[in-house]
Image 1 (cartoon, one colour):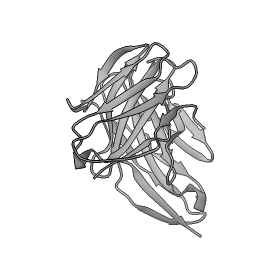
Image 2 (image 1 turned 60 degrees about the vertical axis):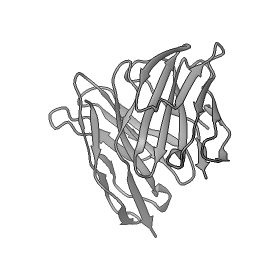
Image 3 (image 1 turned 90 degrees about the horizontal axis):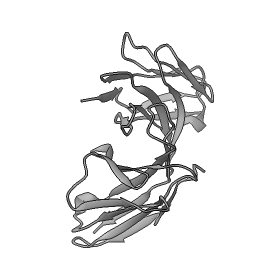
Image 4 (image 1 turned 180 degrees about the vertical axis):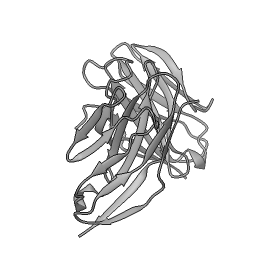
Length: 111
Length: 114
């Protein structure tokens, strides 16, 4: 079945460092891809999404590009802040189906 | 604020008991989803409803059931509770079922079974 694989965490960075969180997927058809973020004690918030190959989703300085040839949707940010500390989830969905999530990657940013 | 409202936010109950979690989707959203988040299993999809009808089932136990009412709110019923059912239960909603539609999550209901 369809699945999402994320890099294991935790990821620990200093403020202003470059961030990459790897995400690859396995799916039939043409899924849409998402990154959700969960801040401590809160629910999940959509960070960005891409609905077709070569689309780039971006929000709050984060970016991810839908790469069909490598079945990837890696999350990047050029300069992280302490406030970016959270758990990041990669997910996919297809028409009529619920989101399928990866296991999540915990990011910890120190000043 | 996502617009998805879940109650209660926290619940502590004993093994063997039954609880009901309630969800009000965003205004206009027809699809409701329930997810369970635990440390060992991550985010697991339980069940989806669309405009009152069950549309998809995930890893939902037979002891669990759900429904979506005519006013589109949904309830997740958990019975014969076990210690392992302790988790954060999320409700989410979306306008329809198209793949690119954003699914909005509530803040979750923390269930602790003692």
